[in-house]
Length: 129
View 1 (cartoon, rainbow, N blue to C red):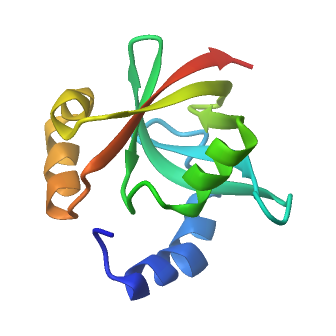
View 2: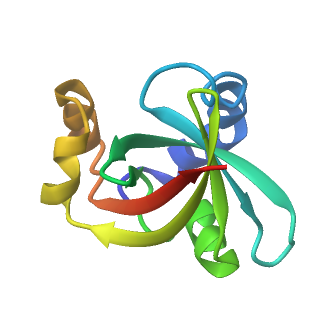
View 3: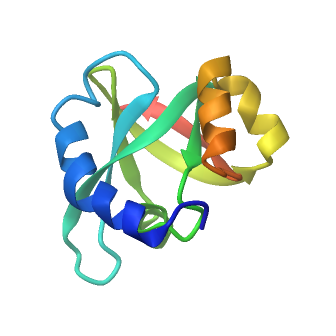
């Protein structure tokens, strides 16, 4: 896990709810992924870092591949993404290497991702829902 567990808990409790108020509708590298809990069945929304790539998007797994939203998505086999006011159906999550994912991100964001220790990325197919 690239970040300290206390920072992750803080983000989950305070930062994510704040970000959910605007990230799906404004320009930038953030979006909202909507997914269903694999045990609870509850619907969740989580802010993520995502940028367009051929036929879909590249998503930074900033907390690694064992993050809850990604595990929920894989278990359910479906998720939606709200980005810049558009809703997308996501399919075929495929892990990609750091080297192949980084070109999708602008230079300043690449530096932030490197400094935070982000090593894992996923490329997904997407269709406007």
